Image (cartoon, rainbow, N blue to C red; front, side, top):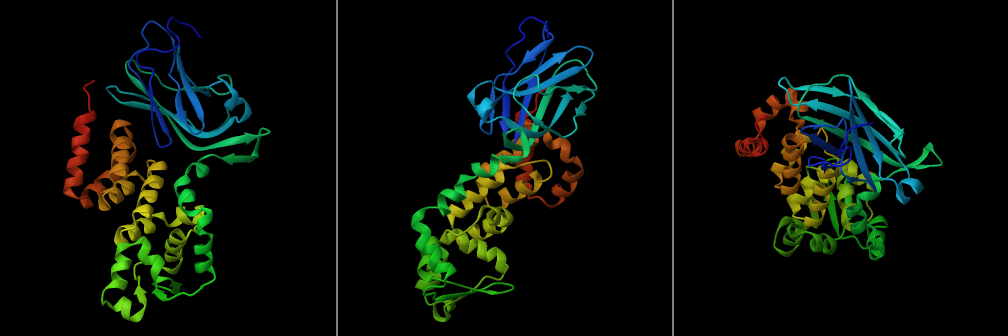
Length: 336
């Protein structure tokens, strides 16, 4: 690797969102080698480096140190090199699964190269802590990062509430779902939701009959809702039902569930779900999720990955949402 100024430069910053890292390089200048600034994803600090000869050679590696040595990352990821053009050109790597300890462990050769400004994307599908270099014994770091559910639902003080639900101790309200019946407690439901509280305070049919009809949730998803309220929900149960939990949280004004769902949906945005997430964010007025989706599409340039789906999206999207998307384009667009 050669060239003066081979380390950091004025455009060495790597931007990150969700599981995507993006490095924009305006020019190599007189050098043939560039290294990015450090960026944080998972529990590691990372670097990207690019070497220019007849092709572009991209390296991804963790920052040397105790964390990388004692808990080396086993990463599953894909890289993309995109030249602004005109014409716009891209080169996408295969999906790699690689144990990464140093800059010697991985290098990707881009098949095409153009002149001028270009972008390197790294999208992580999974990050695992390798144990004894064995893939099968590694553990993913991301499920452990979704602590919002665990912090709310795993406290020891919820043990008694869990027993009330699982053992049906002194239940006093029946919940009818689309395909089954559940039992719960008026006081607990009222304490977590002002909507439920209103049902039992005023002379409504729910107070008189001690019955709530939830006709937009099945038994399984409603069990997940009660599981969150009582502290019995499991991580995989939350992930499976989080969109329905978000709808219920919005309907019954349960802010803790709504906030937790928004954080979770923001965590794993990708090209296959970003338009759905954007619609959900608009529907339930989730500003953080909406800004994350718009940034993913326009700031990080992933709008090109969903151009086949965007026409259908525009046919059903709210006009105010389309206006916000257009304003985002005007904000981030810069003449080449």
